[in-house]
Image (cartoon, rainbow, N blue to C red; front, side):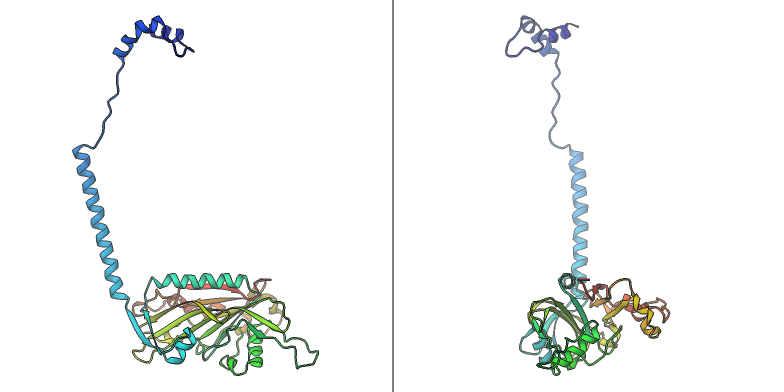
Length: 343
């Protein structure tokens, strides 16, 4: 009670001492307990901390050793002879040899992901996307291509380009030599023998007699001249110049047995089912709005020497999945591209 009376008497007073404070102050200080301040660790705590640190560092060293061992065992930097024509077309470089890593290589996944994101971004800026299979090397990569309106001096309308096949025929009409490599008609699924693929992304522009190529992607499979295996490269061209790419080498693999075939599949609008054309075509008429593609890119993390055949049961022939269900063991890089992104 005495302490309580003291604090009540001195409440709201600042800067001055009362007689009661001078009398009670020494007694309060004498009875006040000063808390003990501990600093540092005990011996037991230090021992536990050192033991945990040793366990953590030992585990980290084992993990790093395993990663380093597997990296050297599975990945090798190798020089391949892909032919002078291929190297010039792919990279605009002289010679016939390229140096790349064997698959699986997880560092290449970074470049593959970059290409995948670039394709999605370019498609978003395009007005039309056309995937075409080919038998040779693509050289149509310039920024603008001719868009004639019939014969010179005539009033014929521009050719209608609303499907990949219409775009293929258009290219062969204006560039009969360069477009000769696009020698296989395309409706929904390209021929397995035509694995090399070009993806043309068209963009709007002001000249009515020209078509602008916003970007061109080339996917090529090559069997090296020595050592066999499969060399693959995916390249992005902007205004005719190589802007980015990734490549990989699959030892012991073949284009026929291990490439992600088909490279793409075309899905049409479901409204076209009103015009029956047979089961092999009608099964791809499933797009709710505008047509689109499934596109598969080569996976640099796949090891075809240590992969087991898929036990997945083949879907019925009436399903579009029957054309591409085996991709599960060949690549994990798939993307969906709209044929007309602006719609």
